[in-house]
Amino acid sequence: MPFFKTTRLLLTAIATLAFTACAIDEDTTTLRVAHTLDTHHPVHKAMLYMDERLSLHSGGKMRLALYPSGQLGSEREVIELLQIGSLSMTKVSASSIEAFVPEMKVFGLPYLFNDSTHFWNVLNGEIGEQLLESGVPFRIRGLGYFDAGSRSFYSTNKQIITPDDLPGMKIRVLSSPSAIAMVKAMGGSATPISWSELYTSLQQGVVDGAENNLPSFYLSKHYEVCKYLILDEHTAIPDVLIIGTHTWDNLSAQQQQWLSLAMKEATVYQRTLWEQASAEALAAVKAAGVTVIPAQKELFQQSVQALIEAQTKTELGPIIKKIRDTE
Image (tube, rainbow, N blue to C red; front, side, top):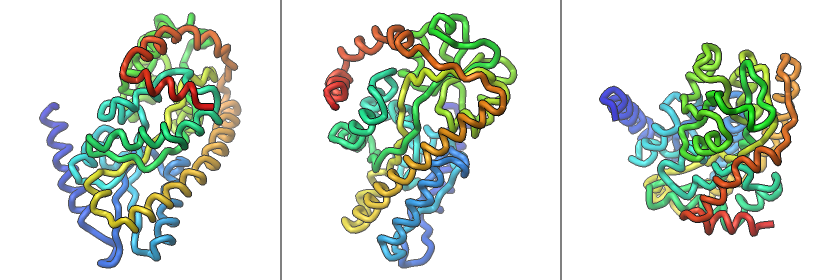
């Protein structure tokens, strides 16, 4: 790790340690939660709701203190802070966790879920619970999932209608082996770029397009420079709220119960917010002049079939089979 990045991480850790030691008052346990989304995002609003519910269930004895908009670093950095005990909780994409918890790579596989019902049956069932617990050896415990919708491609100057349009195009992806492999399988050139730098990169032609969900496309204002959106919905990668095992193990059984209940309630609330935000985002980008293209999904599915079948022969194979067997 470069010296300047190490220094930043250490300074952030020291600052966060000071935060973690604080409480609203001596009778209140306050968990510090960092994430990279802005305060208008449905996930942030859901976490505010989670704080309200946690306070209600605990009679004011437990609260969440939120640090949004990347105040404490990137998703990778806040995961590392959580692992060393300098941060209580964080919300990250499942793709960001796969560098720490290999099983999470399964969410990066394209067209693995039949539809939204299948997706949530998996997440709310035995498979979803096992994946939340798979990070415990790495000092990461999942509390639950937030809806992050389906991810689709958008581009600046060239329409993407079929996978045949992707060769020669540089597509920004998450810093995730799964995302890189998917775009490569479709014929594009996968280019990992940080979220904070993406608007400028699109504007300056560093990349020709990117992929994300509808609310993120809208709230990031990427629609200002990307006038083409194809609804191919290649992946459904949830957001995951995680807590450091050090923090979890130091909570009482009653506190763990309060926190888990508030998480479940926030998940239901956030899914409603997400549906509303997705519909509003689609209408807004259309009004802004974005050409929205309905995808022939079977063409995109065919382009990645070999990638998915190859993964069935890896450690992800049993998970893939369980997901496919889930109704």
